[in-house]
Length: 291
Image (cartoon, rainbow, N blue to C red; front, side, top):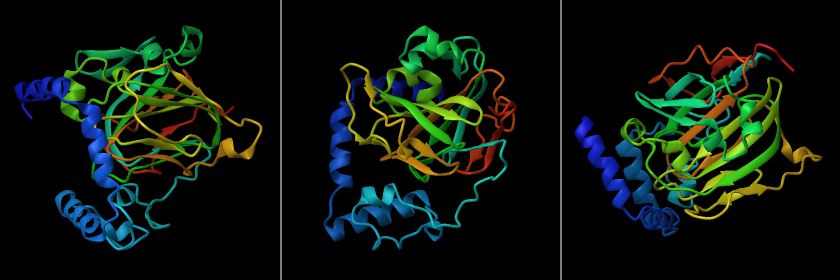
């Protein structure tokens, strides 16, 4: 996509009724009429060349709706979870949008664009300071990707916060041309206690993402306006705990995850580079100081 076309695409998004379109797609994806949902699934598989051989259920018969297919589970042996005690694994299948060091309070988005850590976390400065000069990895999930989100390390959830916002696309064209994209869009911010210390895993919503879901929150419907919501977590129970590779949530359409680590906790995700394709479970970073 040329720069001019990408700019036009961004401007068009500003005019589109993004929440109405997202609601319509959510309704369409939930249709249970067999002929309709089978048609949608088959067309999607053909259009995006989805590898159906790695799925747990047959296509399209094994899915009650198109949305069930979209958040499809993989066969048990479809992905290998790296077992090294010091590895951080990719939480998703996707493409690396940006990766590297956090520059004090600034996170790189694209050439000439960045955004603040404080705005991303929608929190006070002391909480954000823990991750200043730390590391980040931003991974984009295209529509054809497997859309479940898994734990990058073992640990437990210690806090979660839903941040209302817009629903701009998070594809490459928008990332390169819309400033502060990831702080404009709605997101679920999950604070984790792990073997590498504290981490943050952020689920970023986008246009056509009908809901964000985590094992702790259930489905979260998009909200453009409203206050930031702190989500109650049972920190004394086993429900907050997870092992590396466990399923912890999913997107109902394509979107982005952002992983943050404190300074000195990992190797800055040196194995990654922008544009690289990753699969859930493969090592993307190394814990430097287990704690």
